[in-house]
Length: 234
Image (cartoon, rainbow, N blue to C red):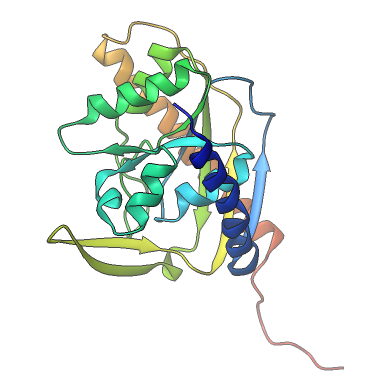
């Protein structure tokens, strides 16, 4: 499932993404424990469209990301995503995306999935979790690494574009604080056909992600307290 061209493209992409994040973003990354060896599932919240790229750049190895199908129809970007082997998630074809991700996990690869399925609401909070993350973990036995991202929502830029004849809006984050907290692995065992168990598992993972996002926010403001009052000159 891997290819030399994809590896080369990944290797060339990481320095570019890190140059952007190091210059434009105030990065703050806290990893609670070492990543387990072998197959694992990275599960972050999704406040902006840049999240997959920033997360991929800090992992230190190639990952395969479930990304909305719309992105694969954007000129140049779509070719880039396909060449890296990322997985399109199209309406009505969710099982196909899960099957592709399962193949990667069975091969010992890292898979990244955003449980919200789309960008978090602009007004704040989080989107309702979907069950894909739970289905992957239960069926594969791979651990989930819950991850909480914090950024300042008032800095988001909403860009309008037309893709395949349809108007799309995307949340771009080009400057400002960007804090990440990667939690300890979560492992789940059970019957993947038990819908209630799968639903409850997905909710448990999302609650953990929400807590880690809050921790990212608290750490950022603890380390970067806002200035209050007026500066006094000597």
